[in-house]
Image (cartoon, rainbow, N blue to C red; front, side, top):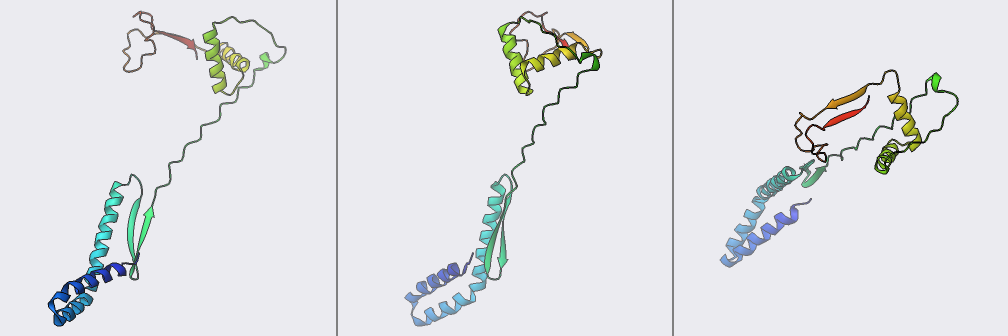
Length: 180
């Protein structure tokens, strides 16, 4: 940014104001305006630097700096790169079936409430699997030798904020069950 036009404008205004006093005052004002040139430049640079500092203070990230290049000012705007969104890990690959599970497939009929089926389909889609594959994995994990059947009574645990059992108002009926 070239501040010379601003300094020249200040000089013209000073000379114009001195014209009312005659030629001698006008000549003195012109000499004074040239003498004040470095001070005027410094004052303008200081004002611009303060403005850049105020802008920087208001920015959430990044900064604005003013640098002197010869007789011109350069603005350097530094913006923090946007936060990289972490890529979600790929869904885990289904474990290879143990040797005793290899071989012929059996077909069963399972009758479950429609709402449970809908939730199972959502879970399978979130895992990137078909409903059948997801259910086979659930049964496989539940019947593993290392599986643990969990049945916990949570009726004495106070829930702050979200209560997963809010729909069930019976105090003694806060249970969590499942396979690990």
